[in-house]
Image 1: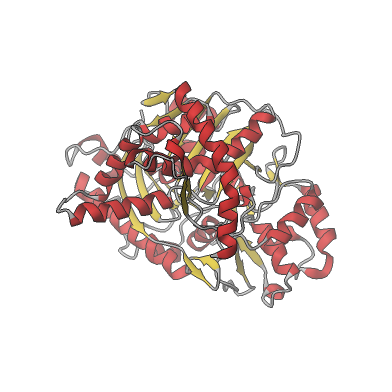
Image 2 (image 1 turned 90 degrees about the vertical axis):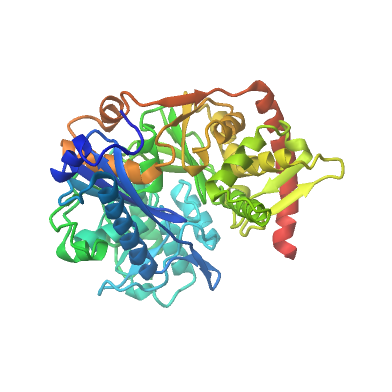
Length: 538
């Protein structure tokens, strides 16, 4: 069922679906790329568009400007529309539904006039340690530093000047959806990264809200925290319609029209679960990008609060354990750029994808334990390992074997290192996973990152042919779920309607890789002292 882009003739069923509006549009604002995907009613991606962007470190705060948000969205949508016309000879005159997804968490605070009060504080910031620790103790529920309520409460603790003016806080997906539809709503998965959600009610946990309100008392400009938060919706509920203003913001060409329905906006974790059909208990998925995280749908609540583990939900509201690491494949990407430049200097015309593919395949030739090399991918702080700032490092002993294969293998290991520490905690809790579904650009090179991830988590890893499509396709599927009427359970819908004939490759852990990675991880843990020292002296 789920295939890659239809690159066939400029007619046929795909064109007919586009002309009749039997398509959905998914948009995801990732850390380094904004992507738009047009999907047919058979869930096949028909066209895509994208726009590269980067966060900025301004006054020691990781942020994106709102102008960059809208410039990037317009560029991605324009690229999508052009790609649709190029592939199918027609532009979509109508779309069945639109979905917006983005990086979870963070802090976008607005006043009564809907003006932004302080620059967007993204998930990547690690400046809310005191607030996160105090709230975790108060609520008996792990509140990570990147959660929206931690940002808000840190502003309370710091008595920030903007606080008396705050009337609404939301995430990036919630903000974009609000501007497109006028509705201040959020999908339950994204909402569960703002404040804890009760899986029984599929809404913010009422007891914990009351506990927070009593603790903060008169220090907020409203009596109840809930008055500042978006309304929570679950997958399949209608979340508004594209307004004239929203249509103009998204597509100044006028191709997309007001009145189009939107599904609830979701975070990248939720769309990753959908994109890998991982919304049922004992299923799990991992997404690798600027950050890396694993989501495990739980059969029962965890017995203990762990600062390394978030508790969030699926887009349907079921409880999920999330191991979120601030640092993913960005450092590996930097090294690919270095090697790409070297190839160019030698006269090669290899493109970035070619260079990345060659490097990843070389990693398979490396020693199972990385040959004594260590790599820390910490461009930013890493709460899972207790680091407030990051310093990318390569460390080796004099007797290590510095080869290209060992170097690249260690860089891939470094992208998975912190994640595997968190997964080890879940294993100790008795959490069982039948298979880990992986997605993201790192898995486009067949068999490499998939095999090494299987070693890192000692679990079979599955990759589908949409591994490179990621969350933009996932939110388009959620938009299709809305169009379908949501008469089926979301998990059943994915299993029977979306992934029934999906081409999925499963790689089982190789015992030699597992043993080698375990040796590497032991050194990695010991070497964290070096990383910690680097943040202190550099």
